Image (tube, rainbow, N blue to C red; front, side, top):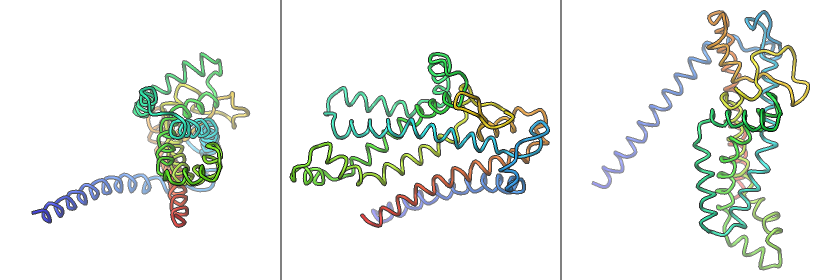
Length: 280
């Protein structure tokens, strides 16, 4: 009976996996079959023209990359530092448990709420206006709970004996963390960071109120200006354009580019994990 139960569990798991892969494959096939015809180097490197009905997505690509850089610069140092404090310094008190619980709850908040909070804090409260910096900081806030959680889990996987050995030979706690614990946890931290940033790069709601624009004639000259981004560009082409049928191929092409960008970031994360795992 136990063997039959195990086989049933594997069959059920395999069936669920096959269904998910089938749905995902169908969606990707639909997008790529309709969008690859529009994707070319000129499409990626050209500016949109004639009311967004022709041309390319170059400003949206650059805006997405700049947004990702700002998000990473803000979220990664704060997120990793918070994880180090919670795992290495903080004692297991009710306050620490409350902080961890709050961080996990923040990870479940809808992204549109972060957009409204970014509007209130950065755009209106700090008077940054609708700008690249406001959108980047808002996405950074959205990314923080995920980075803190994944970084803390990576630190937890470092054996206690490694810390004890470093302390036993006279290293301070700071030196132990800097020279022993962090290098060991780097693969897990980087993997979590890259996966989180790739998710943030595809978000539309948090940047909707904080700085993204449908069309800008040129690239943003500073972080205080509005910008174009691939997720919002795709949303506008798909739902708000006055000639939706005419721009539909461009919308599919934009979706393909966005998927490929996120796929490359995820592939990079898996490569880092594989590279470091070989030496474990």
